[in-house]
Length: 109
Length: 119
Image (cartoon, rainbow over all chains, first blue to last red; front, side, top):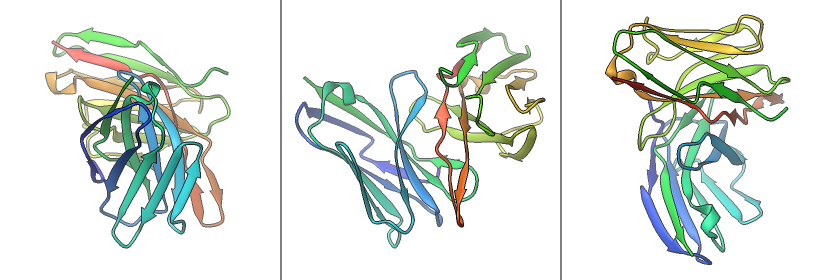
């Protein structure tokens, strides 16, 4: 079963713009992770944020976590055409990951 | 080591046939996971192993599904008497599964998947 929803389901932007995706989840967590999936391929880990952290940065990525609202956001700054992919949040509260429904990002050159 | 590999990449079968998929994880990773992903959805957890022990199975894993990891290295996922509803991408992931204090860190490395089509 899916842990929660991601919003928006699809996002189209121009290169250089920022992209923001939101994730809501249902249960308590230890960590929350974000993964990227290029069409028809496996997932690639992007960033992990622990439940006691509120914000984390990695290169052009910025993740926030609000455990009181059970929500997280992923911001990709200065997007590139190569960022075109599906992005999934995944909650990690025991020993397995529970993924959201994903946001499909399209970045136009 | 080049990462997690899955074989075959694509499998087309007729309803009622049995199929088996193989996953070779990153060699030093002690955990191995299987997921199923249908179009437009996120991966859904099926089962996982720590070394050779199968520690959890999802309710999605009906009696027709069986997974093994006999020597704690590669794993196989078998589906017996396939149904059209089994058509999906089957993803394998491995993890070094690290616990620091009370918080485990479970970053997973995925293979490219096996796409199953049941006709």
